[in-house]
Length: 404
Image (cartoon, rainbow, N blue to C red):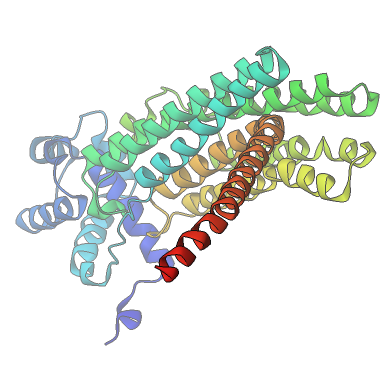
């Protein structure tokens, strides 16, 4: 039979994923083994006790906490169903896919961090050299840069600690537990980095114009950004009690619909992204610029549209993660799109200042090149004149030689 014929349906994949999670969390004694291997131990245990066992047996053989053992069995309905489902998964494990993590996070982090480091450095130099001072919104951009690099560093650690395989059944509970812990840190950390990036742009726009409607737009965008940041921080922080819900999975620690809340917050992020990058566009229409300069200005501020696209892909990855399939059970794709979103947003925040720096130095560089070309032409002309002066003397010498 072909691989497609052997493949399990999505409902079965979801059952295997959830079972892997319960088996991993309920077997501290074997937390270092892959959950599929632990399920093989369960299947052998069920056969040895003739499929009859008690919660105390789970505690004795697999290290299940006494308070967790009854709830562990209840996740399957009862002990009889549990003793059927786990061996059934073991028997059909040949049909399970084994998706691998692609390792894209570290190189993506390195490449984009180099780009944003150069852009932020040029922005600060531009503000000092062209504008005459580094202002408060520049310091906000600097803070956003530090938070972005720190977030990316944690994401790189997350990528390394997540291991080679993406599906739950190919990971140990030690790996899964660390994945939950680090993912929690990233979710709590993310809103603040994005807030500083957007507020630095909003404050820059506010100082750049006196137009009332644009200033009102800045106030509204900034207010929604701050409110969404607070929500994005408190939802993952307090949606589950206790905070380390991954150590208490059998007792319903998360009573809030985290999927709906996360999607709603992500959608508002996209809305504020679009608003932030669209705010300066009316101002560009009113400026008296040459068509070429206007196009360059639109391109400078239009970099933000790429960040909006990355934000959309990030939200799509979040939705797929909550769909609970083997291909989306890893959060590393979310990490990758978040790194792209943050760094592109930073590049957009630095683009106007970098453009001003180029315009400041371009005439001087062009004048130096022109002066160098003129000096070169003058030198070549002088050499030509000297050659013409020496040419008759050479001809006289040649004539005398012929006479001799």
